[in-house]
Image 1: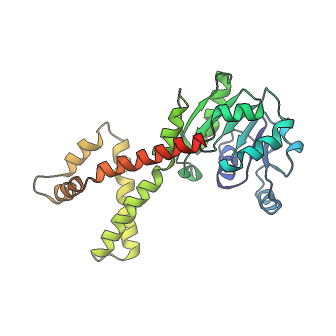
Image 2 (image 1 turned 45 degrees about the horizontal axis):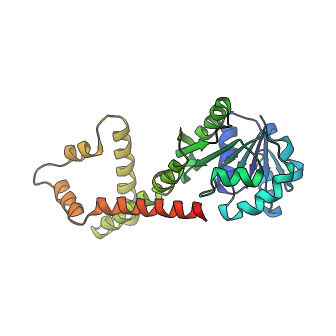
Image 3 (image 1 turned 90 degrees about the horizontal axis):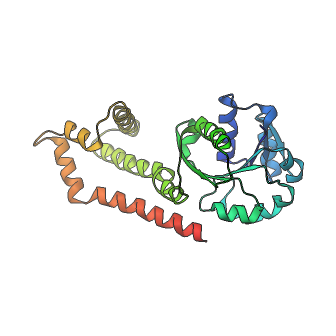
Length: 267
């Protein structure tokens, strides 16, 4: 299977490296289309496949074409590559807000897969939700899921609307976690720890809490009850969070992200 990644930025490079590292494909079967001559030179030095600067030199030879460019560049990209594509090629888009129908009409193509990865994909700890048009075969879906899983976990959603929801939860989610971590680090510094100590205290606490959660069937609320004791320190913190509606604010923030994702899709 010949894979073409359009866009050699962070996610395009992440995919190329992850596919090769997992041995799911080879350098001989990997192509990257990068419009920036300077970036193309840098990509070529990484030895992760053949780097091209023109669509006409690589589109025809690809079985799977991955769009890893900014959504605002999509219209110009589709117009540029349309003369070179065929109806048997599979297209995988990670462009936020660009719907399957939009891609299909612009390219006059039927086999479209839309995915929403997140930034931890760069270290193989990503979360990706993907969906597809009806014309994509089961074999093709399995092939793409295997590719996406090289960057972490991947789940298939029946409805395309789930991609917007995934954008709000897992796509933007790392920023929510870092926001909470940053506040805890600030609290640790206020309590007398230096910067490196604060970072270690908070990062290890998050890492340990997530691992502990993943190794059991207990809910978050059940774990909170286990940590809390009547009249204790954890209870004092949780009472403050509840009094200040912290949980409701987090939910409201995620909803705002979903609303924005839907808005971007309309545009």
